[in-house]
Picture (cartoon, rainbow, N blue to C red):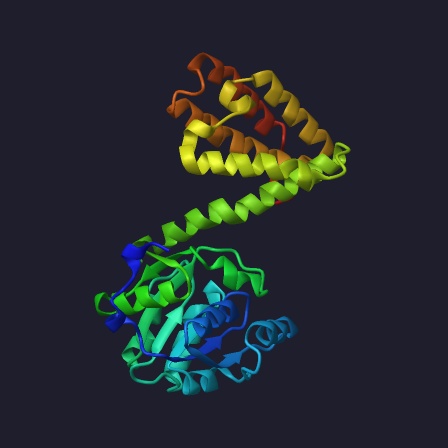
Length: 312
């Protein structure tokens, strides 16, 4: 943990009772992390069987109650519901009078800042947006993964120290995101993490089709090295046939994918084009080779038809 981020102890929030509205994968893990820091989870809401199991695993002995009762019991309430559900939830809680004056209301949506909590602010709540840049499994391992995890934080100026203290107590590192930048921030994370899962899963499927018995073992070292190189060197880490301008190899790829996995062709071509653009811009792909390469990609896209895109 970066010592420069440590707040003055006088700025740390007092030990708080903690509630969770939405016992999905995120809320119970954050509440469990706050419990390790001395706060006390007192209530959670969740109706699905999966929510009940997660709460039992991460927050044993914490009762599951309706959302309004969670707010009635807790000083700090974590709103960990899907992005599209959040605005309606906040409005509903405010309209029913469930929100108390001075209550810390924290949502974990990457898309939204604190503006979405405006109804709660009018009701006297203290709004914070604390989004952990982490993928969650819904198991106790998530608590460990929060160590060193960056949080996208948006908060009113007067609550910045409290927001920073809460993130650090959960083992994270605060990264301040302006209200107007939240959608772009979230899009960047989705592009990197969510699409990575799709790419890896598709690569494993293709390797199985090619006869590889342990695609995970084959891809693990390769992808680990690629990720490390990309984080260290950015576009300078680009390798492979697109960056080299091997148009013939790329044409063979497109032909094989069309034959064995047509649903992957559109994605392959889109990523190859993006890779070519970045390789050109950074001087890795020679312009005289780029013309043939881009021609192959244009031909591949033209003969794909609707099949590739429709499978997405």
